[in-house]
Length: 279
Image (tube, rainbow, N blue to C red; front, side):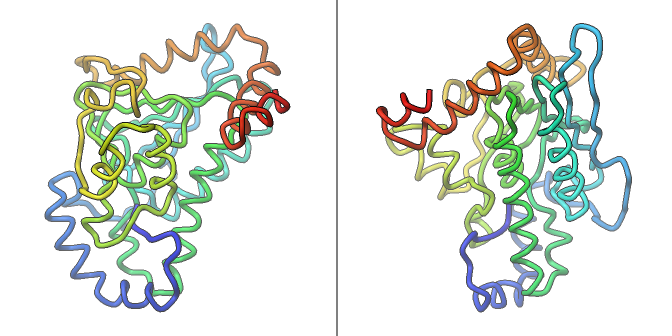
């Protein structure tokens, strides 16, 4: 993502004033995954919502499909995600949700910088707030969620994955919070969720948040990522693993799963005694 969560209006104005040069220079340094795409094309198929059937009945797949923009988070995609999540959270037939990419080699490249560079200072704040809000909505879904990372997950793309309960990744996947290279900080929960996912590993929190490092999925195994799989020829190893995990959720009592997730989530924010009372 490209935003400072608590930036003041004056600061946003200064940032936007030089944003064209800054984004162009930084996109070049971030590598080919960030170059050579346009946000002008509009499509109704940027988000594919699929309700699986047969042995996977109860599993819903949210598939991001903005190949021309490296699955970056645009205003339109954020709106579609928010609408989908709003419908899913009240659907009692949904047992588990998988967030994946429909585009080979990429999970999500973060905020759509091509779109953002055209915004004035009064538009940047609401744009960032909407990204943060939809990521929080995903984190607050009542059923288990799994991010299937079969490619690059940068900035807001990694923040999107961090909002899921489980993250599985292919061996070819790389990820990172790269905002400091843009002279800003993550604005979609990265500064909160990444440290919590890592835990008290000496030096890792500051290194991963402050250096723009892109780390391979193997380096994240057991920390940010629960399972790392050798990528297959089809390029969907993480998604297939996510389906396997979903099948483990499906036989469980649906109410018990929802309550268990709620107890875990609320219990992590309080002391042990209060957490036991919640349980």
